Image (tube, rainbow, N blue to C red; front, top):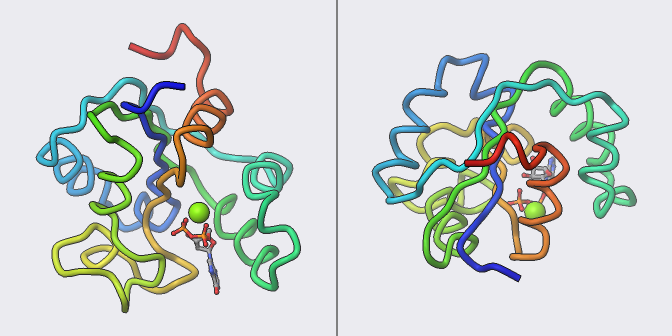
Length: 139
Ligand code: IDP
Ligand code: MG
C-alpha cells in the first residue's frame, strides 16, 4: 500500500463560491503534486456509495444531497505522508474547530458544508481515487 497519495474533492460549495483556484493554490503551496484532477458531478448512487460508512448517521441524507447538488473537483495528490499532511492542511471537520490558515477555516461555512474532502487512510485514499479515476487519468 503506497503512503504518498491521498484523494480530495473540492465540494460543491467550493465550486459554487469560485474558490477552486484559491484552494488549489493552497494545495500546491503545501507541496502536493497533482496526479489527477477533474470537474465531475456525483449521482445520488455515487454519493451513497462513497459515503456508505456514514449510512446510519443522522446527517447521511443531508450529506448525499449536498455532495450531489453540483459538480466537485476530484483530485489525487502526491506528497510524502500525503494522507496525514492533507488532513492537517484541511483542518477539523467543523470549521469552527479548524486551525487558523487551514482550508476549512478559510473556506468552509459549517460542519455540513465544509469545502473539502480528504481521505482518512492510505487504504481509503486508494479506494476513493479508483472510484473517480481510471489509470489513464492518473499522471
Ligand atoms: P471528514 O470529512 O472530516 O473526514 P467525516 O466525519 O468523515 O468528516 O464526515 C464526512 C462528511 O460528512 C463531513 O466532511 C461533512 O461534510 C459531513 N458531516 C459530518 N458530520 C456532520 C454533521 O454532524 N452534520 C452535517 N454534516 C456532517
Ligand atoms: Mg471522513
